[in-house]
Amino acid sequence: MTRSLPLFSLVAALALAAGPSLAAPPAGSPAQPAQASAAAQAPAAEAPVTCKSGIALQLLGSGGPISDDGRASSGAVIWIDGKARLLIDAGGGTYLRYGQSGARLEDLDFIGISHFHTDHVADLPAILKGAYFLSGNHEVQLVGPSGDANFPSMTTFFDREFGRGHGAFEYLSGLSNASDGLQLAVHPSDVNVASPGATRVWQGDGVTVYAFGIPHGDVPALAFRIETPQGVIVLSADQNGSRKEFVDFARGADILMMPAAIDDDADAQSRFLHATPTIVGKIAAAVNPKMLVLDHFMGRSLRDKDKNVGVIRQFYTGPVYAGRDLSCFPLSH
Image 1 (cartoon, one colour):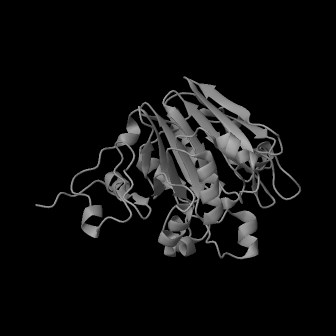
Image 2 (tube, one colour):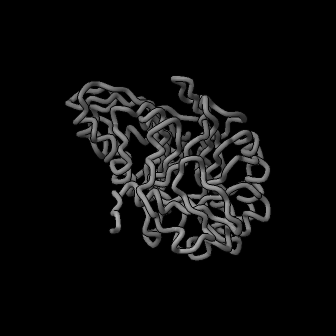
């Protein structure tokens, strides 16, 4: 008799490890090697929900800005001892995945927004509206990049979205101080993307989060480094790879997450915004994480996924995983 799987376990079980060799999956992870047979990839039993113990990275959205990938846009949570304490990015579709993951707004302490493209921030208001339904008052730090002539800073974005008297979602203006029936106080702040070093943006319970400016074309953008008692997770977000200091920022990572948005033969505008597989591979080789997780797939990069992963593995020889929505990657104990 075939055993049916709950949606979370089924999606998590389909997370694919990518690469020409059979890389071992992360400890406790239901990820399957990309080169395994179709029968081997099919889950034979319910996958363990490993994100809810210890410290783990869980992708909410693994897609990009075009709806041809069948995925939610960028977003991830960091689980710490059964609670989703950190949220990095909130692109379209992450509101749904946030609920499916089991994350709860009352457990959230930190939100980091890498940049103000809609595929990284569109669902933030929807997630924060849940503040009407919390059992008690709570606070969360909200961090994003400094602005320029074309993009707002985090504090300006928050004001334009939720500012009293002028915000697009003025009815949520109580988010600034947990008023008007909203039981969440959100404290926005900006990180200078041109700062020469990392900026500490949150600390609690032995976990420290740093932000660092990365070159996403001319879009102010941030990467995040999360240092925990069990290891280090670095989430790159979109970048073209031209800021060499990123390697120093990411060095020592147990898990490095990098976007896989384009091919090596992408046009000049795409390469201005995003790193090619060759550049991703060189960065991963220099950082030398224990595993590389790829996200931000688009229809075009999904079609050439195996080829692109092969390019990456010409430089980085560690385990490479192609993330899916709700994929879970725990830090080893």
